[in-house]
Image 1 (tube, one colour):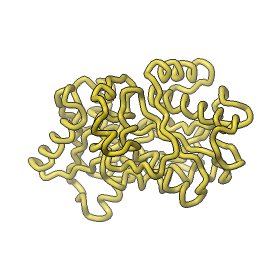
Image 2 (cartoon, helix red, strand yellow):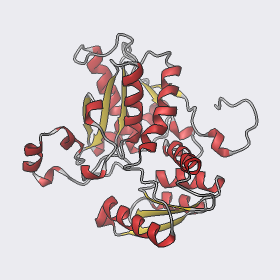
Image 3 (cartoon, rainbow, N blue to C red):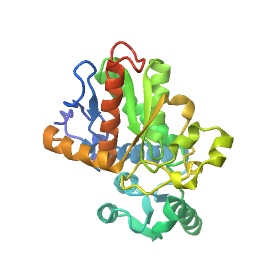
Length: 309
């Protein structure tokens, strides 16, 4: 159900203002709400940064009309940027590790973008290197979602205030998966400024190494490399924290690690029992949010007395 009651001039005006829906499996004492970003036209939260970042770059002259953006992406960011680029007179080129979602690559192309593949074994670091090379060759601009503050700023300006308004400021905890970490960092900064007691939770898949942000330098250097493992949950997690320049551990109260199997089981449960068609990263976030709600209920986590998560 849309909140828009008047005809709109562009699909970009439909980005954001997505609904909050109760998660029925949460404890009664501490309700949990899912923000259904699938209501965005590109079906993910990355539509927000596609519009926000490109419009901001056009406004400040970083990007000229008719110019080219080259972005490394696993999929949803490319779809969000492609959707925005097509409406803003911008050419879009995306660098994607070759074995990442073929469906998402097809969607990027359908939206008018060019997709360049890099070897899967080089991961996102390889995609980032190739994006920089292509930008230099084509006189393009790399928005660079992993390091550009506009990523987090988009969620500070839109996602967080929408949640705050919908719940009348009664937010006990915010929980979000971390890939680039832009979503959680933007929300964390907003709630730290407006409701400092809000409990902030980062979510990663098992095999990701976000925990290294919280280790001492000596402990990190002694860590077994095997701590970084393969995982199938797409869109969140990291294998190299040097890539994740936006993440600030000082803004995070808790890191929850969710195995692939639990994320997959939860996304199936959400579809079957609650009618929410989501991907594995949302399944992981739901597992973590329900666990945090139980911790708040049991008094194991201090959170505002409003106890809304």
